[in-house]
Length: 86
Image (cartoon, rainbow, N blue to C red; front, side, top):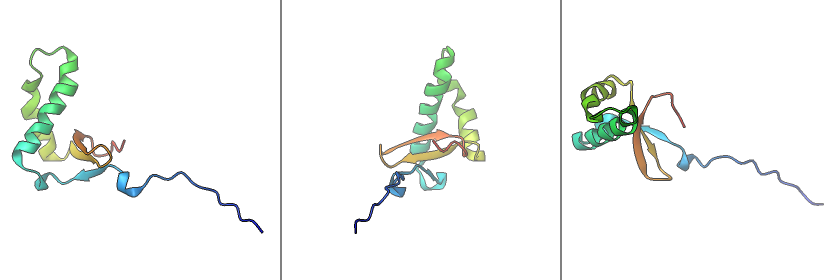
């Protein structure tokens, strides 16, 4: 008798993105993520100085409108909306 197993392609839970609570990060780490977000999104809008948006983006982080997503596969973190599970 031979058994056939169907393999289901499921993502390893250790590879899933997750939200990092902001209070676990140092201020300079948060600032780095805020500046990266500003240059990534606001720099594309032909703004002369995309870092002008830093205080607005930091306020969005403080309110929870933007959260820190960590990607364990690439070992990277970035800001995005809470519901933006990629």
